[in-house]
Image (cartoon, rainbow, N blue to C red):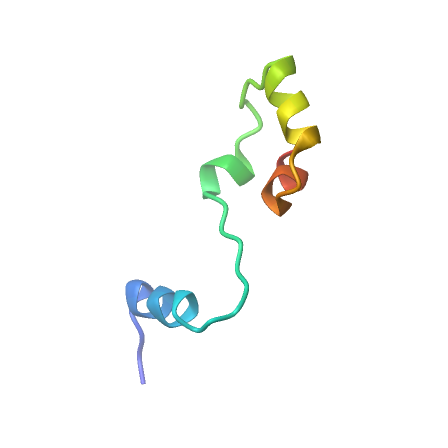
Length: 54
């Protein structure tokens, strides 16, 4: 059986597993300009994504 990318994504996203998705541009571009306020907000956040970005 061959799955297309959108079909595969639908299977994963509809599977019921806990999932965190971060855009490829956020995960791979190091020229994101975070301000001191942005960094402080990440430090205060309890979200898993914030820890990844920090």
